[in-house]
Image (cartoon, rainbow, N blue to C red; front, side, top):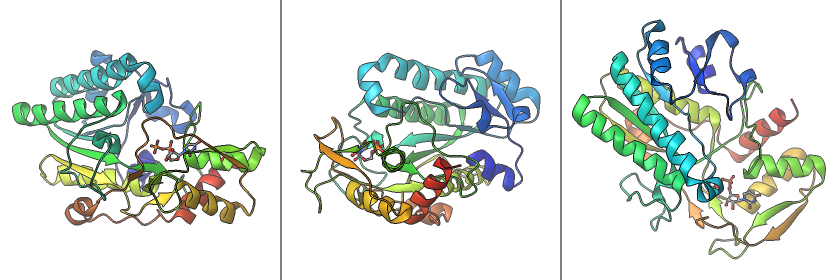
Length: 306
Ligand code: UDP
């Protein structure tokens, strides 16, 4: 999605992916370099193909549950992989990076909405791997002058309105595609926990449309091009939606009932995660424009039916 937005804004883009979890069809063949992050020399060669002004670093494993079972692959791929990338950037003299971080850095936050000043105390190896990279970036700035923007994503959701890109995970673990799949297949989706201290008892999350998320990356990149300092920003709307509210929106958009059952809480799920996104709004002049629950669900539904 960010690649599409970058191209629309006139940037030239090269995409590096090892395709372990990504999809070849998602990128124009001429732009794609199939390469692992561990391949430092390969990354340097890509950065030297033509002038490279900055890196946007998305590459990571991102399944919290998996990270609790096999933390080693999270530290290997997300942390060691990022170190290889930063090493390559140093050697190729690329001094700007936008990094995909996560609300999972906050662990079980106490204050809501969550500001960037809240402590980073992750409760799973996925969140920890992102904190470790954020810290490496702090040191790379202090010692090498490498400038970074860390974007702490809340719940990325929705799809390209033109259905050119969208979620495609295997296995799928995310709420909205699972609700839509339940509508399509008739197989019930499970609501994880109905006894949370929230208005309707289900978990509350801050869903941010991928188009708004992509535009946050461009705003971050441009702040670095304008000489901005290293920063960390939450990317969310500031408004929370419960699982049941999302389910109701799916029924409204699809015009069909969502078959569901209720189950126990999912381990490690905080009751509420809502971003204080004031810093991003004020400093980078960003406002979410596509993140109503209707737009999120409509675009995801169109993508699923593409
Ligand atoms: N959720 C759910 N059933 C599912 C998947 C998710 O009830 O099959 C809930 C989950 O407990 C969380 C919310 O939906 O409160 C969003 O979960 P998701 O996995 O999409 O994103 P996360 O919040 O874990 O990043």
